[in-house]
Length: 582
Image (tube, rainbow, N blue to C red; front, top):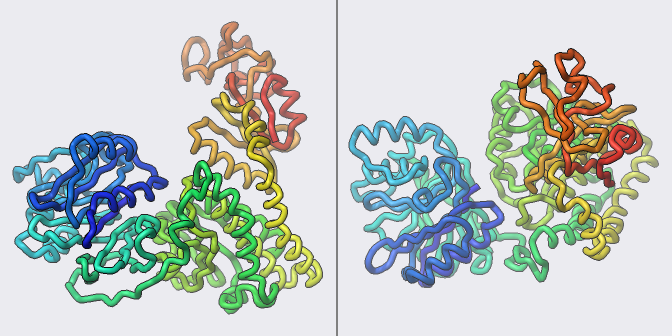
């Protein structure tokens, strides 16, 4: 996802924009750029690749100087990752950056091209720049309102107008945008850490709002130009919390923070024991007959563990849905349903849409989120905060852990209320849960060299096969997700007496092999070949090993495989040459 920064005030904008972009690098990007309003007009600098490439360009061509500017890190969606597609985009008197996707950009672009517009990029973003320039007649607000009425999709924009040298305009629909409030200076960013070194005071821009940032303050309006009063919030963490603090990278730091955040969570929610736990939601929980958890990515995997715990301990039906599917499948609701949204950021677009869908159908909603005051937190009927602090690393650690912990607390609360477990048993499980911070702390205290030694044998692994059963499968799904993040080909499967995915294993002979092209040669199925030639069972045979598990060789054999699983003996018998790990 792209990152947006903006600044207007009394300082040189360029270094502030660059620092802000560096604090948004965790969001992922393939190009970066800034636009600064100087004495000679708006000056753009853009570069492909990492921020260091943009910094090198600033050193070579000179950094633009001015007191007002915007910046952007781009994650390519429309058009290749290159300088011509990097933001900011400039058309006429308009310069802007964008986070989100304009779903109807192709139709608008076709119309603009027919009217003589000339495009210099392949992005959907440039469509908005052309629309604004055509609508602009000296009133930025009217131009933004008119142009945005044509857009379909999710977006957040930061905009400069040439004849408004001390103003930055912001527009939001779904994609997050936050305004930092300083002393005679204002900041704009996709996420709070971008401006934390300068201020902890901020306001949140809502969907359908337009903001005007000036050095002396910010004004927010709806599309009808009615002023909207905004509550000034204070970030519950400081700039130090968003720093590496001596660690090599954020993920290492956040792994080490897990015992601390877990202890903080238990201390916060278990002050009055299970009886007082989640007291704000007691009326909803008392009437609940089915819990429907909705989330994306890692939060969805946390939900799978929560489902297992809730059904096992509380004997309560629980479902887990991917938010992107839930919102579009026209789900059936019934009396007694409660929708629980899981989101670290509280701004996940699909999860937010699912929340609104549930509320529109009169279903009670609960949110487990990390970011205080986020959109999901504000719109849910009940919100439970994770108190994990800022999570900068792309691969979640403490965020996922606290989500799972919250769901286990919910399972124990439901078991306590529904009397599916005795009070003594509930108390014992709660006590056992509160020992986790110390146990995890001991694991984290181990020297990194120990874990590096464990990982070293798998350094050259190109493929990973995860196999587990029952609760372990939910954990495996999460690890599978992380393997894919590291650009490893990963597969996962249930395992029982015999691993369920036996058709996807290895060449028992130990020879490297490849899956055959469909329909190639003499085999009408997925033909298997090894270094010694075609599989003897494959030639014109109905029992090709791609579809059975009793041949001398298993299909889809690959070199460089690592197998991680619980049913080691079964797996080892089937493939004595594979690498195994716990």
